Image 1 (spheres, rainbow, N blue to C red):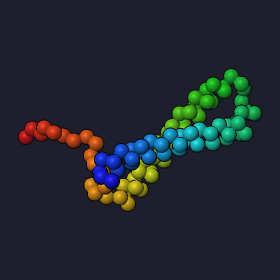
Image 2 (image 1 turned 90 degrees about the horizontal axis):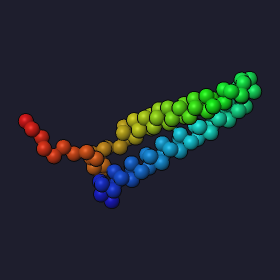
Image 3 (image 1 turned 120 degrees about the vertical axis):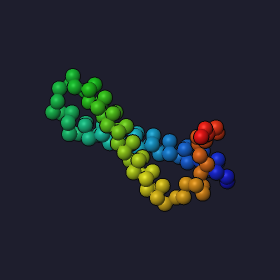
Image 4 (image 1 turned 135 degrees about the vertical axis):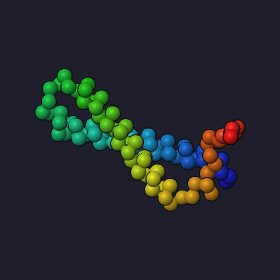
Length: 93
């Protein structure tokens, strides 16, 4: 495989990972809400709670993605395996 294929596979894998983390964190937060918080608050708060859970799951997925990406960048030599996505073609000096 060449660098372009590695780059595209990495982007695809990172996107799938980010979506999976987001879905899993959403499900976990919904379960926590249903077991512990829902019985103690009024029904009118349900729409706000789901909105907050959705935003929280997106924030959690971004944080987890950043931590995993930093770990991978320490382990993998980017210049050796990946091609740059954006390249400057005309540099003015």
